[in-house]
Image 1 (spheres, one colour):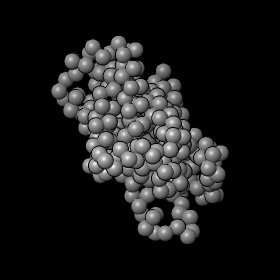
Image 2: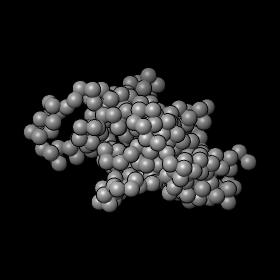
Image 3: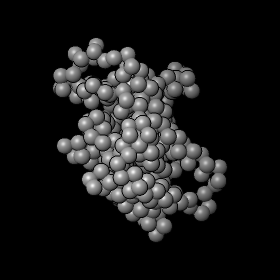
Amino acid sequence: MWITAALFSSFFAGITAILAKCGIKKTDSDIATAQRTIVVLFFAWAMASAAGSIDSITTISPRSLIFLILSGLATGASWLCYFKALSAGDINKVAAIDRSSTVIVVLSSMVLFRETGHLAVRLTGAAILAAGIYLMIEIRPGTKPSGNRRWILFAILSALFAALTSILARIGITGIESSLATAVRTCVVLLMAWLVVLLKKGWKETKQELGRQNKKELLFILLSGITTGASWLFYFYAIQNGIVSIVVPIDKLSVIVTIIFSYILFGEKLSAKALTGLMMMVLGTLVMIQADFM
């Protein structure tokens, strides 16, 4: 069941990147992040209510709450960086770099959660995945170096914070129903996202930008919030009930969904080098998954 949840998480995550890209053509990426988080918040609490877990919020231990808050802060930082990267770079490349968080999580889970079965196979899979990501990061000739450094930096930071999110969440949701944990974390992300917007722009400028925002882009942002909420719920259910070093690689296969739709909607084609990198990413993921079924 948790493997199925991980697959659904991967699909919705892949769709989210496409919807987000459609929503930030003119809209400021920080504002877009804050807006979509509102949708995720309502979605998360609705699911927590449906699961009947809201009443148990008072039973969350201080330790778990601290880790959930830290996980929420890491998630907010990851989202802000990811949207910045998407606004400046191609979806294919940004998504590929973001998937490097898989390698970090797999290596960390070996140390922190002692998921060391078939260590040689896991490390081989991680190495193949890392090599594939490197091949996917292909800069088009003629692009300004300063621009390259900017979106790559934000994509790398997004990956680092995403990896930290998974580790902290695994620790923080021990004994907590997954949808309730998601709802609590989302509250932290929402506060962080709007605080960043207001600190950077101030209330007056933020209000002006919201007033002139393209309605079509707002719709795409809201839809990306819905798919994000769905991806989160499936993801945290999977890592709570399954094996982290399997769930994370499956979830990161969302890059395939993203690449397919980015080609259909934006005409972003893969070169032979990038295609080889994608195949290596998939192969590395499958190798890591296979290690836990040997």
